[in-house]
Image (tube, rainbow, N blue to C red; front, side, top):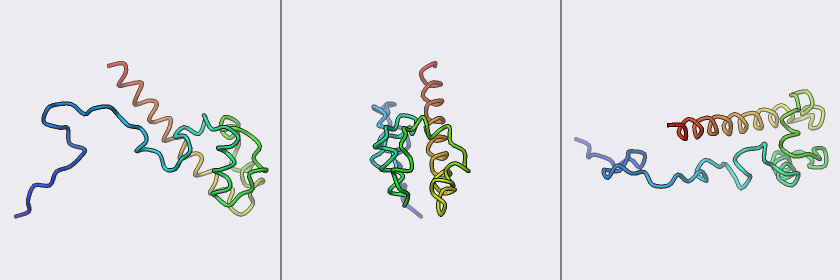
Length: 106
């Protein structure tokens, strides 16, 4: 018979979770919400993905306005992957924002 394993996601018996630390959701040292990225953050993200930062002289809000084709024009070999990663990060940030708003309204 297996022993009972403790799961850190189960609420403690005292009923409190403690403060929420959003850093556990971060994938790297970039801000969780790509809409808040400055030009340096965008450059870091692009260079980690194999692109040239100078092809993206913009902040995160400007990236939101770019289509898949615009990414592909700036990074022909991996523009689709870059676009997909950005959209995934953006969706994650939006979902978290929606969740926090719902929790705040309770």
